[in-house]
Length: 412
View 1 (tube, helix red, strand yellow):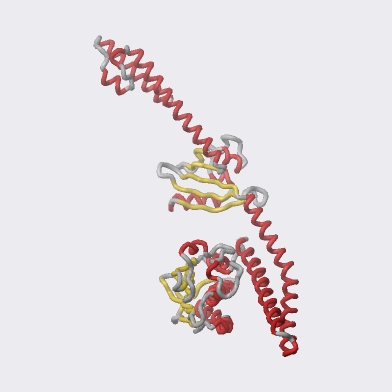
View 2: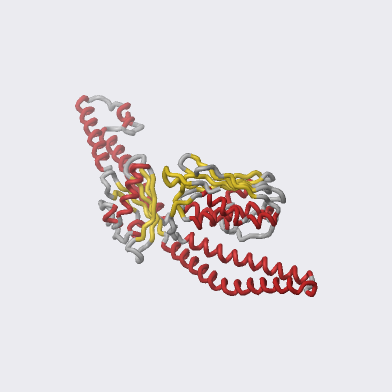
């Protein structure tokens, strides 16, 4: 900006000299271009003074705008960096210096590797430079430093903008929640198992006693069994969800035949479906490409989807499990002909504890089964979705990437 002011001043002086040499009046059009509205009545010195004042005012305005933007960037509570084309930090706000434990101004001119001391940042920047945007999470100084979520986006003008968000406290709270649920689940499992065993014993003894046990007492014993089963299911699902959300990796990886798994999962729920009057059918073509994953976890997804489909189907309403190949994915779907899901509820159906009240037809549930299914599928690099029409039924589907070009039998 100083160069701009000096340039304008020199231009005005040159113009004044030229006018003085000619001994002519000031060129009004030229002076208007320099910003002097009443140029015809002003001398060259006055024109120069006014132009310089306006240039200085413009410089002050730009400087104030820059300060205002910097203040706004600090108010957001996130760190902001601009990495230039040479791979060095050109700009950094106060929060970025605090997160990276650098003195004010200590980040300018440094490379991201020097600032973060973590090669993953360079990988994120390279991905953003190539694809336009990238992100990740790092922990500075291992367990002692803050946990930062990094979002990088290529600038349409120059360089790459990097946003840093400190999630240390969030991760700490998540860890506390996970530990609390884990401890609570273990503490509840023993008494619940005892109550469940006692209820089962009471039911057997009531059957053995025959008419000596009143029907109303038999009903109460049956309700104890059912409600205890619900509590045991909730505890198990809470524990499962807590472990999945904690980021525990899928460790039992193998080639999984989803066709065979669909058949096995359907047979597991065959007795339950028969009691509800809901026929089950499996539609699996041969051969089915293998997917890479944890067979037990993927079986849990299928059982959860099947259980919901049976629970919310009317008597005689068929539930169909289909497995098909779609490009480089294997898509598994569970179709029912129940009440369906209201359109307003579709966006929230995979949330924890979310329930569609009007769909409570055959008893309650924990509201965790679909959340667990979503997390398991996403852990396997897949996606899950639902298509539903209220009053017509629902189709829950999930897609997983094909392991490779080899195939295995469907096992139907």
